[in-house]
Image (cartoon, rainbow, N blue to C red; front, side):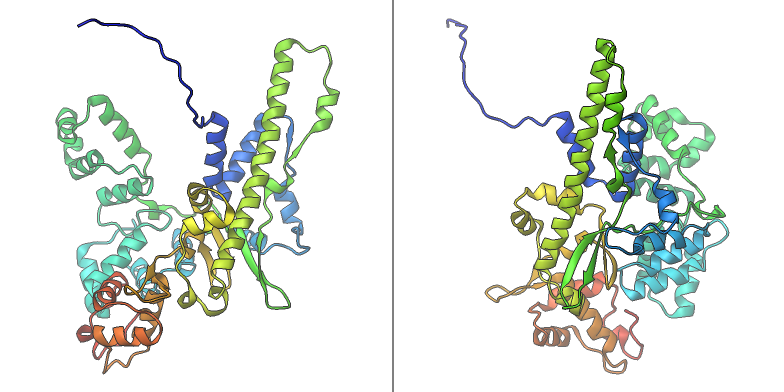
Length: 441
């Protein structure tokens, strides 16, 4: 067989993602608090970027762009004093959009933790017996409590506390799970056996141990926490005199970010080539950042407006009026890619009459039997189910079949299996278990 070397030339089209484009996409995903920290860092590094003394202006009652002191600023002032860990966690529970029964149980469980922030299986059993709570519901409330800030309060052990903190950071792996399950080997100094058990090398084990060292084994023991707004909303909705709802962006430090053009004219003309290149890079980076910040803010407001158009009844009628909505639909409305909507939605919040809600809350799947239209939102169906159970008579609770019929009358066409799934998801007991007891949902 004869081997021949040939050269072929062909054209190919493609999209190259530059490092600056990747950075812009990353900034699109950042929550406002992280965005403010990033901007502050850039201002410190780039002399051509100027940022006014936001804290000083805000403390003096600086009005926002709408002519009044921002409610966000007021909330930050209220949170300016040091608060205890328990107070901080209770605030998070009060602002939660989780079911009422879950929040109540979490607040009650917070009273049962010891001075180290620990719970035990015995304490949990006693809690369930004294309050007539199903163990599964109490465990669900404990899992919710574990993931509040500071993460790990309510854990049964140090290992579980570390596991929850690692999971919160997205670092919990099989190797870490094995390490936490065998911490006694670490006490004995058997690092070689521990590395073999975890399936990692000695160097990787050292890195894992360094990660554990920076975790907080007793997060509840801190006397005070750093004052911060628990949920900082980027958007807010307001109703005008005609009853029409509008979306606005909160005032933030990025609005005052400007380019110092006078500094360029003040520089000496006898700079070296290297210095001129540095100044050029600073100017280019400053203009790029100003453009990215403006586009990010504009895109967030547009996103809120499109969500409001797609969910017109929510603000007046609540969760039960939600419509099925996907990010693909919003992407088509905004004429952007679906991944862009996903980045905008991530870790962003909107202040509504029902509280501060994550933007992801407005995206919900539809439920309905085949051939029946229009479908209703799954979140709306769950809210209606929760209301029906809460309003039922304790001596005559609604069965799953009866709930299907009532939901049908409310416009939710769901099967009995779906009702059972939603009921278990929200921690609602069966009609037999609820009989004679007021449902706490």
